[in-house]
Image (cartoon, rainbow, N blue to C red; front, side, top):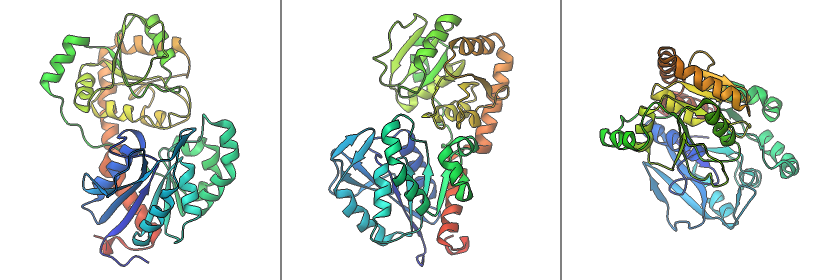
Amino acid sequence: MFSSSRLRVLHVYKTYLPDNCTGVPRVIYEIAEQLQGGGVETQVLCLSDTPSDTPILTGSHITHQAKQDLFIASTGLSVSVFRRFNALIRNVDLVHYHFPWPLADLLHLTAMRKVPSIVTYHSDVVKQRVLGWLYQPLQRCFLNSVDRIVATSPQYASTSGVLRRFASKTTVIPIGIADRVPPNDVAIRSWLNRVGKDFFLFVGALRYYKGLPFLLEAARMSGLPVVVVGGGGRHLIDVPPNVVFVGAVSDEDKEALLSLCRGLILPSHLRSEAFGIALIEAARAGKPLISCEIGTGTTFVNIHGETGLVAPPADPAALAEAMIRLASAPDAAAQMGENARRRYEQLFTAGDMAQAYKALYLDVVGISTRRVD
């Protein structure tokens, strides 16, 4: 039972800063930093190809790295992580797992000390269908065993077959991000000279589920300029002349591009796109959004006709039509951008996310808020 003046939480995920600062690691970082001064002491356990022998100060919290021995089917594997995990849970009040990472299921089920636990369910297992089928018994045991499950949007909670089986202990806490740092004028001028303005912007790693081939065809059909930010994309061919790939950029440059763009487009067509943090980044910047209806958090962030437009997945013609509609109605597009900013402020701030997790932590360990504050 918790008896300290601070609630001690251990996050567990396959990768983290400084090796990876996108996606799930970024969510963990925001929770940890937002709560560090509010009665919650955070540590993170992850894998690394080149692990540090000593704990790493990450922001104002601590990261522990175990050696990654293998990486198979998007899953990091490690032998030493079991020893490290069992050592760490001796001195924590709650473990916060981030799903999917099958090794975390094993860590939990074989733990030498039972600790209150929650899991944030970021995504179904989508790509690895055969391995996913073999993984189901372990997954079921793990999700049965944890105290609470968090979905990041109502849409994902209702459309995931896995989450529907655990509806009685599933709650929704949307992903949130910190408020925007205004873009640098020098960066804005630099990008204005390089790519112009009033383009549609794509931001994200160029993975199989992002729908880039459909975006390229939509750009060809609409004739409207598109700027693509993100690493990868070497498999993409026959790129139309109105599409510019600029590779990975810094946060400062990303904000400059958001300032210059007409709107953000996220053409992801598969459920692997469980939320779409790029959408809330653009909403935070007051930009209208274009996304696809795939039954996930993308349609929780982007409300059709209010914050932007939602198109059918894998449909270049529908994407092109949405682009043309926003480009031909700048006043309506600007209003959608303002609505998107308000929706960010209401639902997707890092502070609100962190406080929701704090309340859940307190509920799971069975203590009152007064004993932590």
